Image (cartoon, rainbow, N blue to C red; front, side):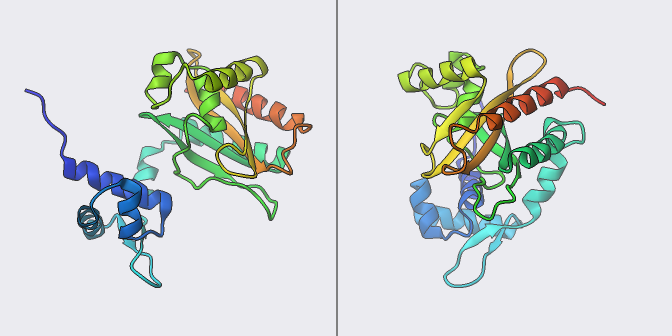
Length: 242
């Protein structure tokens, strides 16, 4: 006999993720974002607040933000030997070398998540929010990851692997070693991505450089070169202990 998932738990987790993505955020906006009845969202918010996962953001109408509790859980999930920890110095070096924001994105249960970000030193910069979910089909991270996946793997991300636009982008990525998104996800922001492969040649992560489009121009090929080199170096270290 199969066990059915608890809808109330699923809804609470969906609300928690939406708060993380859009904080500070109120019940009305969450209801619209999740296409869920406002009273159901409110019950989830009250429950999450009662157990310490969210807190009132303060100022104006009631809005919610994450508490520090998710950070504690994130710390438990990350071990010194994992890919994210190994990537940190490589991200820092990549950000210094290119002068732009460097991001590590990991595929996880059909999502692509920005798990670490080293921001550019420029006053005008582009950076995803830590923990944000990146669009799978149009983002540089998604295209880079999909370029090393088969059709069945890609379909798990809710993307049509046979879409001609995506197929062309993946083919270009395989040919040159890096993906490109010039304003397709966020206007005036250009991102370049490279896949990190594990020891079996599977897509383990993506490294991404983000910048205002006016700075990350097509003639900056050295940026893509540094990115691919960093992804290769991180792949060589994947799952290996020092």
